[in-house]
Length: 352
Image (cartoon, rainbow, N blue to C red; front, top):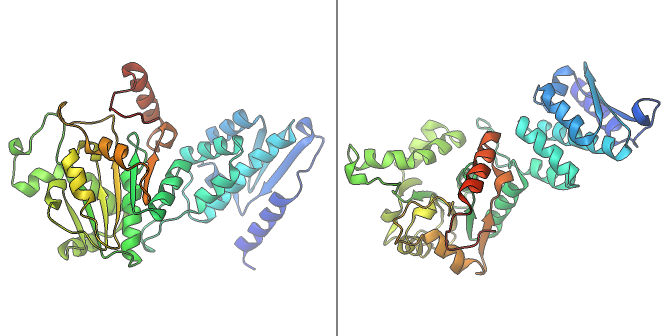
């Protein structure tokens, strides 16, 4: 048995033992043993503030030194919950999940809500592409449920605020489907519309005019595939990135289609694309109905799609919420502050 395997066995024996009592703080404590001090640092993102956050939220005291970590508290359930958090984070790290402040604090919140089983499922839901690229895992329960919706439906509509991973996760699922030969091409499309701008006034030829609108899609691909691989796929038409208007008149068979920024698609464009789907195809529509840049007299195709398709079999509607924002925590606060300042923007649909 290797040193690492031995350490994991020792840790698992300690972690799964009945919660012991002692003469320490309030009489409840448990000690977790790890391979070395570095392993302990990794599970709290090498940030003592995260352990202080665990102490504050769980009502426990945490002490760490070398390769062990001790949890003490006046409440047995509180100590057990703190133990669950650290065990789940350790197991997630062993599976390749990168622990940061968001994942640490999100885990604390879920366990406090009695959702430790969902936390374990979330950390084991991996989207893998190759040994050279890091696997992608959902960072929130909402993201995990979104991935399940994509797997189990032909069309998935993902709506919610910026930073929730709507498009990024959809692209990860598309690349995985391509790698697993479930589809033979990926089509990424978005409307070429931005507030107060017109393509005709932008410099350059058509490709140069469109690049700023499609750049976020290229950036996401670079996280999932090698640059040479992306270029090869695009040269062969296996990956296509194009404006939504270019989809007219086509039949999209054996394709994974992603419509990004769909709140800026017109009703005609959305209907056109959704009716292009052929056999063995899958489609994900993403957007934020509170960020519509269309002229006021034009109704958003995303809003109409939500209203018309919500109860159609094979079509899933997934609503992301503020806790699903996985960018810097300040982004969540900005979104909440703007919502409070502006009120709920009228999009002619109740998004909950």
